[in-house]
Amino acid sequence: MRAAFLWASLLWVSMPGVLMPATAQALSLQGEMVQGGLLQGRLQPGQRVYLGERALQTDAQGRFVVALDRDAPATLSLRLETPQADAGPNTEQPSEVFHYEIAPREYQIQRIEGVARKYVAPDPEQVARSRREARKVGAARRAQRKQNDFFNGFIWPVTGPITGVFGSQRVYNGEPRRPHYGVDVARPTGTPVVAPASGLVTLAEPDLYFSGGTLIIDHGHGLSSTFLHLSKLLVEVGQQVVQGEVVAEIGETGRVTGAHLDWRMNWTGGGRSVRFDPQLLVTPMDELIAAAAAAAAHNAKRDRAHADAHQHPGSRPAPAMGGGDN
Image (cartoon, rainbow, N blue to C red; front, side, top):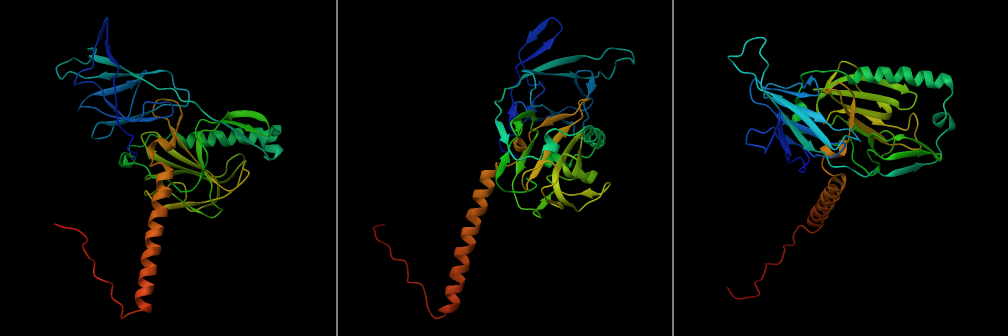
């Protein structure tokens, strides 16, 4: 997982009528405390954590996640409840509320020209179709499975130039539209797409109106990945996939101007669908591309040396000579 997935600092702990500094028992979170971030925490046995009135799902190790959307407020509040073993069934359990500061982000304005008019101003029939499809997509994202393989981290589903980022304001043919909630990676049609983490396929649709070929993988705890504009789907609904498995191919279906992958992530564990930034979970793309280029250069140099050795089998390298004192 991205190196920046660090422990976030706690601002304060509030109890009825009291403000007190954080202690060693404070509820610490891992992740980037910014709009669009994904945070991870861990509880002690028996504890429960609430976002508003909703208890968050935890695994056997007490781990849980909470996502922050594009325009998350400046403060995140979580309530930690620690049940007492000797308390009666109707006894109110002691709890503490923890508040965390969320850093704001500035978002780009992305202007896209050449989009077909039917996708910018769809007719009533197309609007009705897109709404039906949106309900289907929403249902596929609302799974609350206990799978927790995603705690091992995420990888890019494809590598290549990033052409669109999370949160950017989209302007199609000069007309402002909703923000972009994914990250776009430009690659040719047919490029393989892999699962960024293990999970269960909950939607596999070859031709949705706006998103074209669309695939959703549920990673557990309300987390899901959605892939848009695919040319080919290689998995089916109900199929379990593992991280790195090829699940689809890039295309240019739906509302697009060229072949690319639009990767989106959602979290529904807090009672509503929160869109967050996939880039905050993975190694920066420029580092991956630089590493791949360095590896390719190393392999090319090795291959040339191997070829030269076969062309001149009797040659031996000159011995290295020292040029200074001990």
